[in-house]
Length: 345
Picture 1 (tube, helix red, strand yellow):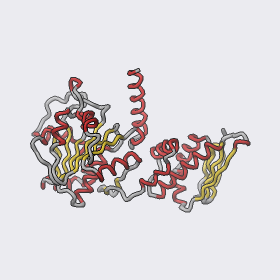
Picture 2 (cartoon, one colour; picture 1 turned 120 degrees about the vertical axis):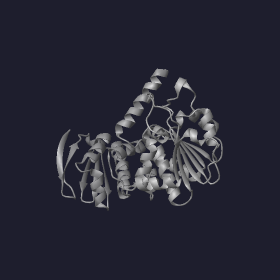
Picture 3 (tube, rainbow, N blue to C red; picture 1 turned 60 degrees about the vertical axis):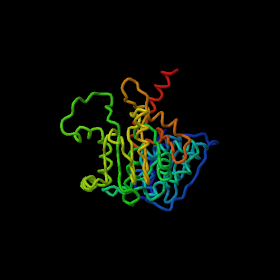
Picture 4 (tube, rainbow, N blue to C red; picture 1 turned 90 degrees about the horizontal axis):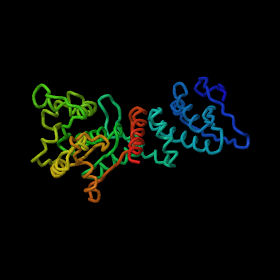
């Protein structure tokens, strides 16, 4: 491999790898782009995005004015063109092109599903206090959000970083702002994650707050601390441990049960039967992170088996492809899955 520099439409000198291909296998494809800002987003500040594409498909990508030319072996060129067109569609929809969504597009191209990326082009769920639009970033997340829209009870099962809780809170805030519900209730079992915290100081609220912190964080981001405190004072937002749900009927509410893998079957049944009129329940959890003592059976695992054929209840399974945190989170999940499989063989 050697490098060459060419002038780009936006006046920068771009550096590319020059692959050496047998002449008989050389193919070239040209993509014409009308939005030059999308080309800037596609290439990245230091061409890091386009270099990822070149490495992935062993092609050379050059920019001439409004044209993007891709050359290399036939299969590589076709796949690279699909990836480029998909990323340009994301850029035109206002998405920032980064390593995370490039890797996601690679996986879609591999499965021949890149055309479905257009379904992510919507107005989003809600807007955070900082002005950021919250919306699904993967097809799995899109399906999960659509399930919440169309069903009374939704179970979202998946690994860390797939946005299960965050998107559920966003949907709750959207429903609350639209006056579809009068109350948001967020709950989770108070189970320690593999370590003993001992006796915590303060009143009851202080003692349970550490368990509920992820839920607070999501609400603070979407409502702002002051508005959250005001709505909580009015009783419109409730964040409480699961034990507080017993004996209640929850009408006109959007209820989220987080970390549901740490419920017992009895707790899960108790929670599900709290459902009242004009309410919606979203249950989230990761069955690979069960912290129940004495190897007790998880209520989440049982619920996915018991409730799978009931109308109005939908079970969504998110995967490592739906991880929207640092790319290493995806790699860590895959590594643990591989290790678990090897231990069972």
